[in-house]
Length: 363
Image 1 (cartoon, helix red, strand yellow):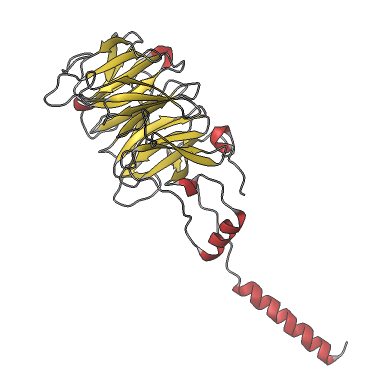
Image 2 (tube, helix red, strand yellow; image 1 turned 90 degrees about the vertical axis):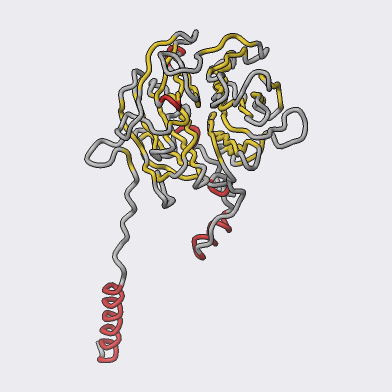
């Protein structure tokens, strides 16, 4: 082998060694944000934040490549002032008090649409509370109309329940899974005695009964905010002004309550909305604490998730308002200030599992 060849090989070897020496070390994948944190066994994983349609709808392949190369932010329709959330088989319903309609992100189908923005009998004024039954019918508590609006799975307006004569300040709506019985919470106010839950036939709109009255005693309310249905038809009512959750049976008979005012875990400062999962655990979002707390059916604290923060970020909240748990156990939390929805996945559930895991492919 001649000297020129040896010199060429030596130069090539030196270049290869230099390239290896200057190559940056591999970057470790970021650790998932889990709750509770180590060393405890995680129960929930922060999965994603949703701020608008671009965070949900499938991206075009060319646009996705361009964003990876240039760092360009995804565009799309953003949430204006979200308040409450409800979920049914991968469809995420979000009430928006500024936009004055309900935005729907249909994740499995890869599309979005609006409900209540068209002129006519089904037009919303100021939607806040939401719920959806097992058939996919949507129920919207409209504080502006003081009525509950009902829409079919195909977005068709079906009926309106309640009205000015029934509510002082309608705050939320809950329907049983069969779509038969509707619970509407009247938050009342300083000058109103209507601090109660009004129960209607969800189909005919007939008034069936009322639960609670203004006060601080067992089964009474001071500024009730929201209601969720748990196992055995139990009713969990957020009693905001009394800083507790009040529990009734299906017929409105008082059972017990849990919570008190304070800064300790298991207490409340400004409880807002409540949700229940399939195991009967109760989730309460607290605006002042900037978190949600999870209790068992009897009111024993299991876990809290999130922190109050003036910096936007996963599980950081300034004005959390709405909460929902879907069929797969994913938890959805709305923050009005940061205009986003955070999604938390049960640690035992794979990222591609459940209704939300069935996302439409990129175009």
